[in-house]
Image (cartoon, rainbow, N blue to C red; front, side):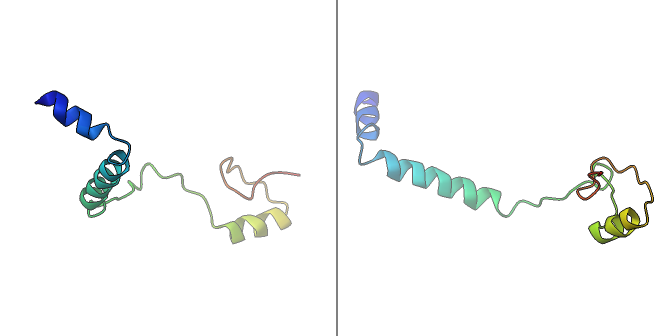
Length: 72
């Protein structure tokens, strides 16, 4: 009995349908889940516009992870 089930699942025309069904099930159950960022874990940095203004004034800001503080 298990052999028949496994053989029917192994047919090439069935595999994409099973995969699509599995993806649909994952999406149905995962999309409604809330996703919130913890503010204490997010790296604080100024807005890119403020970074550019400070760079034009030659004010050294030490935001190493800030996207527009590349030096030079």
